Amino acid sequence: MENTMKFEHKTFGKKLKTMLAVDFRRMFKSPIFYIMIGVALVIPALILVMTTMMDGTVSVDPTTGAETVMEGFDNVWQSIGSVSGESSEMSMDLTSMCNINMMYFLAAVLICIFIADDFRSGYAKNLFTVRANKADYVISKTLIGFVGGAAMLIAYFVGTMLGGAISGLPFALGALTVGNIVMCMLAKVFLMLVFVAIFVLVSVATKQKLWASIIGSLGASMLLFTMIPMMTPLNSSIMNVMMCLIGGVLFSIGLGAVSKMILSKTSLV
Image (tube, rainbow, N blue to C red; front, side, top):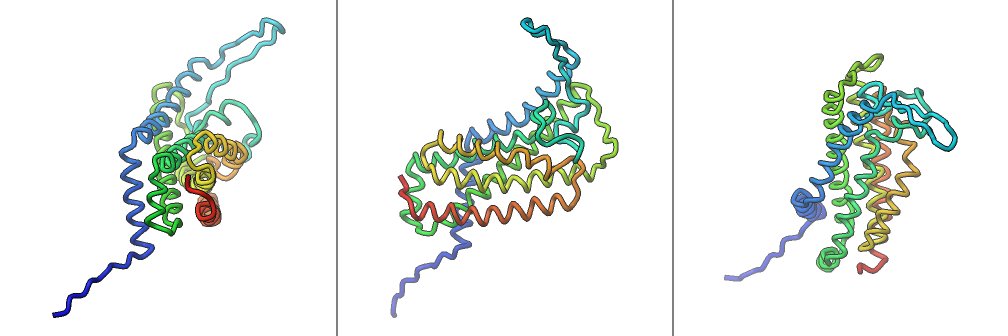
């Protein structure tokens, strides 16, 4: 009787599934992930409560005598975004800066920490020694970054609802509909793919240098920050959702290919 030894051939799909299972397990067991979610939940509640308390407060510059009136939010939905054409995307007022779009910066920190830890701990080097194909690594990091970023957006939305209820701000939709709000949130979630692809690219380029990856990712986020309210206004429609989804997929594929090339051409230490 002839004994034969069979080696199972792992397809790309099986290897990616294994990588995703490991990465998701690591992320969901990581304290930093839950800290970020907690921060995303608390920030909007604090902003809405504090700005409502300080609304109308007048401060006087002792040197010039100029008076500045503190203006808070008019309604809860301003913490989520602004209506298309309602205000200039380049404005630097409170409602245009202190809203849900800050979560893109928070997602950058999470992804940079996660990937930098791979290279600092030696996990990435050991992984690539066994597995030559680096595409599954880039795809896995992009997908978990997307899930993490989406979770922060949802946590911020929940925190906004709680903060609005505590501060007594109106929930009146006005000319908006519930469908607009849903489309706005979906557009913001899909737009996260664009930012995640950039964060992964910067992180694999800087590897274990966490400070460099955070600075690079935050810098790229600041350059693209004014694009967010234009792509994801409060009065979003299915067109906004589709544009963000298509753009996110294209950016993920294009920048993912660049990230893979960087991993293949550069040292892993």
